[in-house]
Image (cartoon, rainbow, N blue to C red; front, side, top):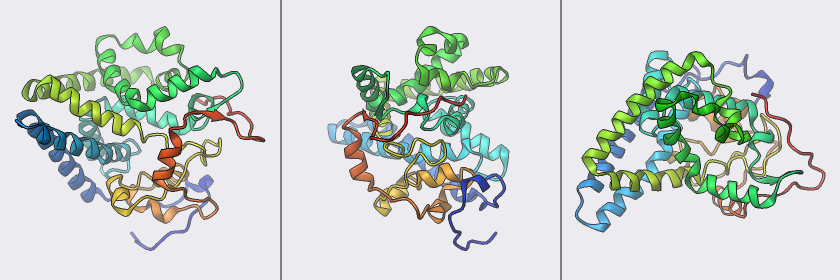
Length: 316
């Protein structure tokens, strides 16, 4: 397939446009390398006798959970590999090290593309009817680690009691309810089997390196991941397709993220693999800086700008 640069196109054409094929061999190599780094970091932290050794391993682990998730994200969109068995197989493995059920995470993420910047997913604005203290509490709790923590907690809950997703605790939270209510019942058996494998895997890892080390590395990694998950959306138009940013990042960091900072391009062209997203820049939109966007993000929820209508209801 041609590697020639492509111009940005209307998102309405995404279903019909011809997209580049996934860089399957590259993705497989990256996935194996990242998994090896994560396992090595766990081993070093578990067997190190120095604080510096544990700290370095923790930093490496927290950094490399970002490209791990980026590749998992590719598998969720089935653009990790052209072979569906390889795509889903690596998706299951990458999700397990996140840790969570691939089928569950995929359903939640694809639902995000239907609900983006809707009432269920506007965390950065205080909308009419919102209570400011509740909005701020939810915002800082979510992005200081709870966003990631919800995944392993859901993994255990789905294994032990699948109907937990219908509990009042979940259903009374509009954003959580919107995610789980879109999961077809026919997938629950597969999800439980994946959850069982994930719990067994991490029980084994925690037994080898120690539960404290496991909690430390995954806790810091969860904070690293959670704190960056919404900056690509915050302050963007309240539009399901255009509600994201292509953020300018240092080439090394953009490489670590596997172009996840090109998030507007991804939402406009979700079938385009990560390697080619810069070709699909939207020339009508300004590209904010990644670091300045991250700093501004932590001011928390702000009132809707003058003249901006409130978000639409979520499409489940």
